[in-house]
Length: 167
Image: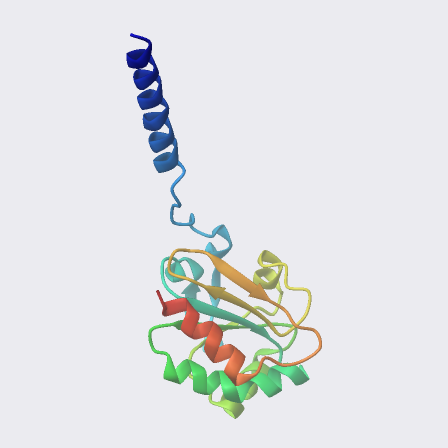
């Protein structure tokens, strides 16, 4: 009888562990509220940040006068072209539209670039200075990168972008 009680108790413990283990299983990250913004592209078209939810995406915060942004732009143009499964969005600020458009033209940045002249999107992401990056995975999780001492290398950028679509 004592053995039967011990077995029942052990079974109850095993079931509880199993149930609790399943309840604590990892879940997809919730949608990132920071993507709930609207903006205007440098060409004047409307843009809704929520369209980026659930897909790999890269936000690049830049200004035309930033030396590191100027150093990163050629590599970014190449990496964006080589990764059509990832959405790239530039978020330009602290300048006028003409300077922003000139920068995009100079470096052939053939992806969406937003006019954030008032810095509202930068503020949503707490970007203290440029350049800054947010790398979104399809599950909604993200990584923020803001290096104040150097530009991101093409190799580092490509590695981070590749990680967005791998396993």
